[in-house]
Image (cartoon, rainbow, N blue to C red; front, side, top):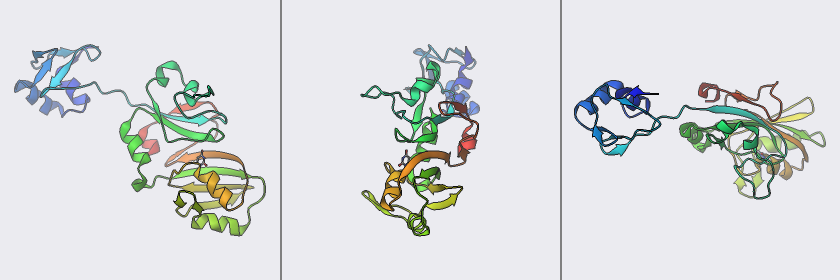
Length: 228
Ligand code: URA
C-alpha cells in the first residue's frame, strides 16, 4: 500500500511528521535515489527511502504472543536432535517473524513470551529491571518449613548465590517468584534443598499471567501493556 513519505518516516520512528516534512523540504530525503518532495508516495515493500544517506526501513507491526509451552518441546528455532520446537506451534506467518523471550527447559511447561519487539526483549532480559517470573512447582514430597525458608533466603547453586525468592506453599504445590533467569535455576534451587521436582510450570512473566483456559500448545495475542 502506498503512503505519503512524511507518514512513512514518522511511523518508521525517524521523527515526528512535522520534522519529517522539514527533512523533505531541506532536500535530505531520497526515494530510490531521487530527491523526495512533500506528498510523494512510497511503497514500503519495494521503495528504498534514505534520510541523510541512511536507509529507513518500515516499522514492522509489533507482535506479542503468550504461548503455553507444553512439556517436551524445545525453545529454539531448530533442534539438532530434531525434537519438536515451540515454533512448530505457531502458524507459518508468525513463526518467521517472532523470537522467544528467555527460555524454558525441555521438560518445563507454561508461559513463554514471543515477540518481534527488541525493546521488550531487552527490558525483560535486563537484570536491572528485576522483572518477576512465577513458577508453580509440584514436588514428590511435601516440603518442610526449613526447606521453604532456605529457598526464601536464597541458595548456593553452581553459578553463585541466588537472590531471595518469594515462596508460597498452597494446595500441595510450591509457588516460587524469582527475577533472575539463571539456567535451570528453579530446578537447581529445588535440588539444593533436597526437593524432587515432579512438574514445573511457569505461570507468570511480570504482569502477564498464563490464562487458566489456555491449553498447552495454544497461544494468545497480547498487548505490550499486559506484559510490562
Ligand atoms: N527454571 C528452571 O529450572 N527451568 C525452567 O524451565 C525455567 C526456570
